[in-house]
Length: 78
Image 1 (tube, rainbow, N blue to C red):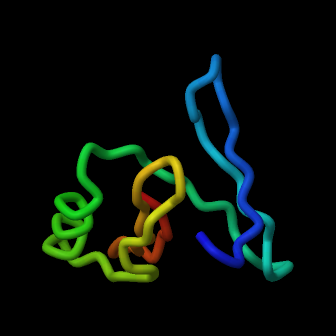
Image 2: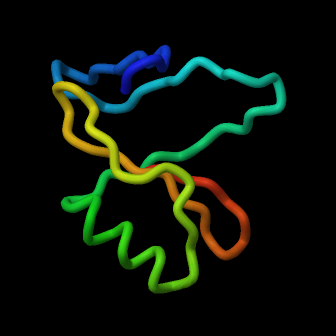
């Protein structure tokens, strides 16, 4: 994630989460959900009416992530 101030939180030597520095004062907290396949779950979110906020992107040393918005306007990462 180039250009993003991101910190990985390790739990017993295993990545357990992360934090991104806010870029705007009104920026809300966003939950990230671990899934076995970003592609599969991103497609499922869209099929159920969710929207793309950030397309699938690589996270160095961890895998991939995508940001979606559900039908109630909640933003979340997978």
